[in-house]
Image 1 (cartoon, one colour):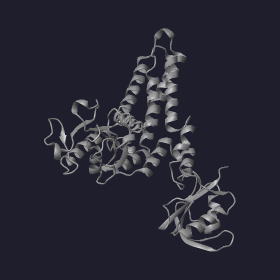
Image 2 (image 1 turned 60 degrees about the vertical axis):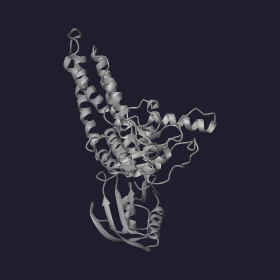
Image 3 (image 1 turned 135 degrees about the vertical axis):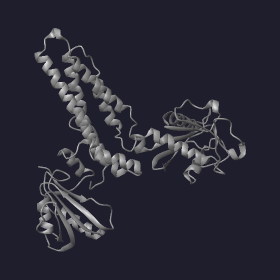
Image 4 (image 1 turned 180 degrees about the vertical axis):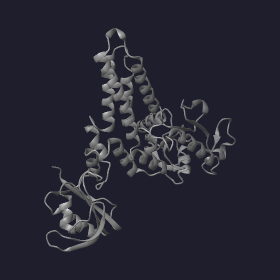
Length: 421
């Protein structure tokens, strides 16, 4: 039998109201020992909360009861909506902890129980984790679509199609004559589903939305990279001097441009050097340039790296004068060109992100969708092989939803949650 767990599920005290959640087979018994009689399921009632041993009055609170399996965790739950002072919360948690069979929940354990009891699948759990961590409006909307089961519903459609194709293949194995060949409808069905999966793989991924679109400022030493970063960030984040090689490691500044998360990154000046420390910085800068979503280049135009999202800048325009053709003149001193640069970066970043009404896959989800698509793209001249490939595609979807083979990702995922989630 599972343990009964408890935790503060609202924010850190002090607060006007705090929520303490108890979940597990002994949740209702624990609630009765503290609050007396519990209200009907899904009904709130005011109760005096008393210590189960001494009978001391601890608080007066709103109490709610939920019965399994129709609860957030799929177990019996009691929620205590109490006053949010530290002393009140500490006394109630201590009272719960004094009861045999109850223990404090681990981070993410409530959500993990919801997953293990079939209330949510792994994609919805990932959406909840993203929703808790969301800092921009676009992150919130994308996470909410996932947490509300958007991807789960789409996967269910794919799984239904797979089951139909599998049944078709098994019938062919059992009843078709060998010389009749493979049914063209079966081959076509596999190809159409594989094409649909590959179209999903071609969509913008969720990582730039979660982690921020990486905008890298690069160029030779003394090109004005650090000054530009400070001007865009609106604060002195990078050291600026006239000495070449001042920046020896990259500096990251998270920003929000028009609700889009941006990770603005200053890099070491790109040049040959015998200084061991500077050489490490140059090597890291080169790697960041390669991994940039958008690259702001402040060096000579002919030396600009080959990058699909390259913005070539004419820096220090206040002293260097008019910009050559196809270069945007910017000045960190006068802010010339900065608004136009930010508009360009915002427009490019939007194009790299999923639209607000579209589901986006994360790296793990995309890997399993690709696994299913690859299986469906297998040989089509033998119905036995087709049936096996359909089975492999079903296994990939089971991993995607968390029904099989995901033990290695569960601890990492649920460890992202707070104690009472």
